[in-house]
Length: 122
Image (cartoon, rainbow, N blue to C red):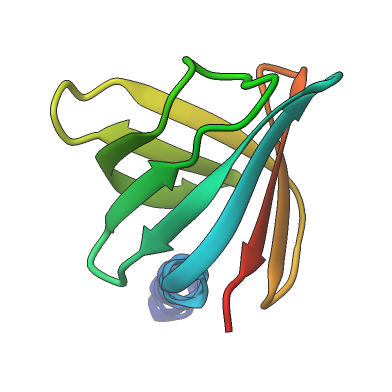
């Protein structure tokens, strides 16, 4: 019986460490681009290791979002290859499906239509 509990503990611990590693790996400044057909919005997103994030978008021609520049604060986390951004002011959640990622790039999709690309700023 002790072996079973030990195995359960190891698996639980490994999953917790893996989630923490995902969170830590995103900490820092990133360029972000949302694209759908010929509409594009770009900006910057900063992730902190404490779960806070800030997005600042720039005004672009053929803007995918509302015209103009925007700034918003979020809480963020990753679970099961979904990056969730929850607005700090109204708790609205955006769930991005992670398609691929490495230390310097993250490719995701939102609502199966919008491609979201993040590139780490050095």
